[in-house]
Length: 163
Image 1 (spheres, rainbow, N blue to C red):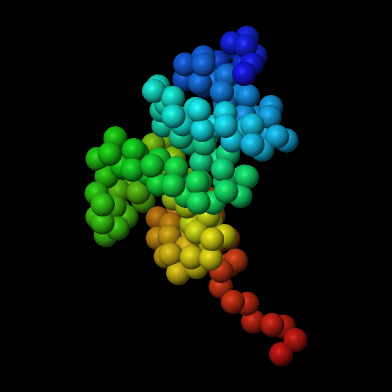
Image 2 (image 1 turned 30 degrees about the horizontal axis):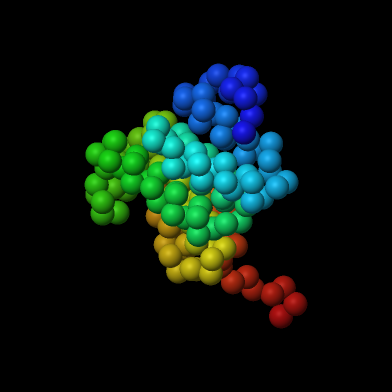
């Protein structure tokens, strides 16, 4: 693993130095997938792991196309944000809160993770659930900032222009 001096430019990242080193090591080991995966797993298993680390981990696995791991960790992120923000569990109760607070950083994180979850489910072939997530996102995001329209466009059958 890199020395603690390897990742000093990550000063904006509010996690302990040894966790920064693990995340940095995963990034610089990107070409060696097995090694990078070990560093990410160590970061996830670290006793001081945090929401920031889990966000990094789900993004790592998302871009690695390890959608099952990304899905699992994104769901943890959603649960942690929901708990911290005391969000309701049912969509009818949650929707107005997300719409009203969509510019608040924790809610933006929630919506981003939810959108990523929709994309991961789509890649896993769970089309109905991915469409449901995209539809829910679309109902709270008039500007399509979180990609719901893209997910729906990808998952919706297109009419062939040659007909």
